[in-house]
Structure formats: C-alpha cells, structure tokens
Length: 545
Image 1 (cartoon, helix red, strand yellow):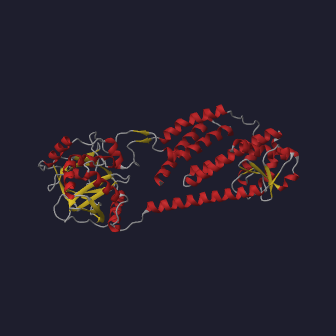
Image 2 (cartoon, rainbow, N blue to C red; image 1 turned 120 degrees about the vertical axis):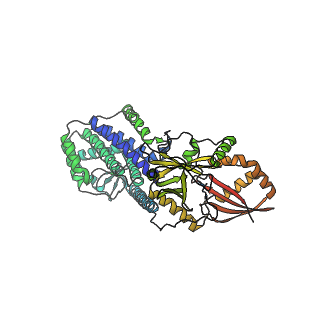
Image 3 (cartoon, helix red, strand yellow; image 1 turned 60 degrees about the horizontal axis):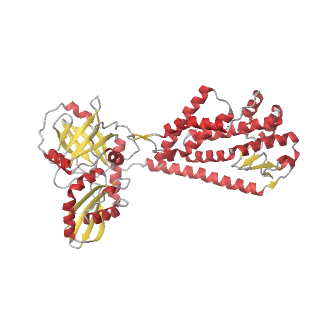
C-alpha cells in the first residue's frame, strides 16, 4: 500500500508542476480560473492511488531484451551437487526500514485524519449550539451567532457570526454576508475538507500542503471580489478585513473570513487592483477540466514492464506455456554434454553481482581467480564452466546459465536454463539481495508456512486425484512442467487412495513449505511455494517412509 501512495504522490507532483508552469507561461491571475484548475488537481491527487495501473503502455523489458523468454519459476531452486546442501551463511540482523517507514506513515496519517475528524465534530457541535439569526439582511440564509467565534466563519452551508455582529453598520453586514455567502454558493468548505483529507493521506508531500494553502487563499480571493462588488468600496472592505485580522476562532474546521497569516497580502492585493476578476461560466470550467484531463491521464499511465509489478506477473503475461514436445526437446538439449572452452578471465568481471530470480530467490555471482561461482540463497557456492563467452554450465547437473549484456558487455540479467525452461533473472544491487536473504532467514527461523499454502496444496491434491490440476492458480512455468506429468501423477495418486490428513513439517532449505500428506495406502512429502499474489509457483511430491 505504501509504495502505491508514494508513487501516487510523485505522479501528482509531476502533474502539478506541469500545470503550474503552464499557468506561469500563460500569466493566468484570475482567481476563478486558478481555483478551477487547482480543484481539478486536488481531485486527481485523491483519485491517483486508485487510477494507477488502469492505463498501461506495454514496453519491452529493458534488462532482458530477448523475445523468446519463458516464465521464471521462482520456486525451482536446485543444488547441482549430490548429497546434503549447506544452508548458507546467516546474515546479521538489520533494521527493517520499510516496516519502520510504513509505521511512521500510518501513525502520522492516522493522527492527521483523527485531528480532522475531531475538528469537524467540534465545529459541528459549535454550529448546532449557535443561535439562529433571522433578520432582513440575512435574506433567509442559514446564519447563526456564537460566542465561541470572533470572526465570521463558514461551516458547510452555515454562516456563523460573532455575537458582536449587533454593533456592525449596514456596510459591514453587507460585506460579511456577501463574502461568506460566496463561500457557500461556491462550495469552498467542501473543497477545503477534501484538501485536508488529501493533506492527511499525502502528508509527506510538499504538494499536499501547498495545495491546501493555495485553495484556501483562492477561496478568500474569490469571496473578497464578491464582497467588493456588493459594497463597491475597496478601501472600506480592506478596513473591515483589518478589523477582523487580529481575532481568532474556535471553529477549527471552517473558512474564517480573516486569517492573520493572509490578511496583509490580501489587503495589498485589494488596494492594488482596479478591476474585479471576471467570473466563469460552467462552460469555461468544462474547458479547463478538458485541458487538464489529458495531462492527468498521462500522469496515471503505467508502463507494462516497469518496476512495481511482481516479476512473476510480468513473466506470466509475456509468456505462453510450452507444448510437451517443445519442452521435451529443450530438456534433451539441456542434458547434452557440454565442452568447456577458454575465455578471457577479464570478461568474468562483467558478470559479478547480484540477480533476482522471481519473487524470492537471489543469485550471487562471484569471481575466484579465473573461475566464476554462482550461489543461490540457502545453497553453497558452486563453480560454473564456460562453454562460450556468455554461457556457462554446471558439471554435476543439466543446468546452464547465460548472461544478458548491454552494449558495453556488462550483464544486465541472466537466464537460468533448467527443466526445459529459460528463467530470466534481472540484476539487483547488494541491498536488494540482502533483503531477499534476510527474508529467507526470517522464514527459516520462524518456521511458519506461507499464508494459504496448505489450502492451495489440498486443492491441488484433490484436483490431481481426478486428473484435472487447476492450472489457473499456477504460474506459467509450473503449468509447463506439470502438463506432461499429469497421467503419471494421476496413476500414483490412484495407488495412494483417498487423502486422510495434511500436516505441516517445516520450511525447507530453499524456502519451500513442506507438508506430510497421509493417504489410505501411503504417505507423500509435499513441497509447495506461493507467489506474493497467491499463485502456486512450485509443487513437488515425494514418496514418504
């Protein structure tokens, strides 16, 4: 959730900067035009988290520019060497900054929203307790008087006056009523409320605070123009504002006629202007909205291959499962003997680094003398031998690795050739690799199953017993591996008989959830791994004791 909020704030900021530059170039100063513009930006900002991802532009992947990529199966971790596998080096505990940042964000956002709610309730209570004012100059509007306010304020469609209104002259009453009723007729209070909510959600963004201040100021500028038009005396109206300037109000969520922070600037503007700003029709407002909509749509566009989309989702959308014949041919090719060749050892430096395979697995590539070593999380570091300048192979398993390079020869990713599939992994930095390693260590230490893994396993076992695995909840890589084996798996389940019970046994070295399934005629040891979006990406069955 927090990454979506952060991305929405950045996109809204980009939209606001573009519009601000446009207004500056066009020299727009009419407060009615400015208010319509920034109100539109406010609405887009509030909707941005929900709009993200609706519009997608497909882009070719920048790090793996290969057209025939098959989906990565992030759960297929392997150990080419026979015998027990070393659990790897345990990393020292580090601070989980993402959790801390998320906690700080929600704490501040909750505080601001709570303060907004309390302010609204207190102001509503003050409004309800205020005494109605029914005199000719109120023109039948909802006007009330309260001893808790010292300046005129607007709450919703209600105008609240201080009890000292009885001493005002006719001009002052007309000016106040014209100013406050302009707030009511233009719905300024509700936009101020939306702006306060936007500020609470995006409190870390300077745009949210600036936008709130700007909308409040433009609301006063428009109402000032309405009051001056009514009494036709700029100097007298400026004097009225100055009289109210040093007073405060207990109505925390309201539009006060004279805020001390803005009085000086407003008075200067009122006395410097000679003409009133021209009001806008609904057609003019529609034109402004129509001009902003294309920019807002552009700000919400999400590229299909950008970060933020889970790796397995990108791969599944861009790939199709192999047919059994093609899969068999690829498996046969990968099992063919490899011939080691000599290459320039300096090339190996281009491949050293960290790579992410799917959602969970990190691959560390290192150079030791003139050899290249590859280590998966939870496994030992093993040497790979070159069969060309970019492709390497394991001597103890039918597994190969090809590096994808940029024009300068530096690796931007790799392909893991295993089980007839080509599984892409993109380059990451050390901090990202460390987070994956720490996540693995945490799962191993906690020894708790992934949410939903038992239900997913039970569902697949029941489906396989009927010879109809549920491919819709599998990744494409797992679908490709499962299809050719369905008849054989079905025969094995027929021998086992009905399922009686499933029990969790622990988390395996490669991060799989391990379950024991007891059947009428035997026991199966089951390994399963889920993607973050709930799909099954790895599934293995082994005969139990």
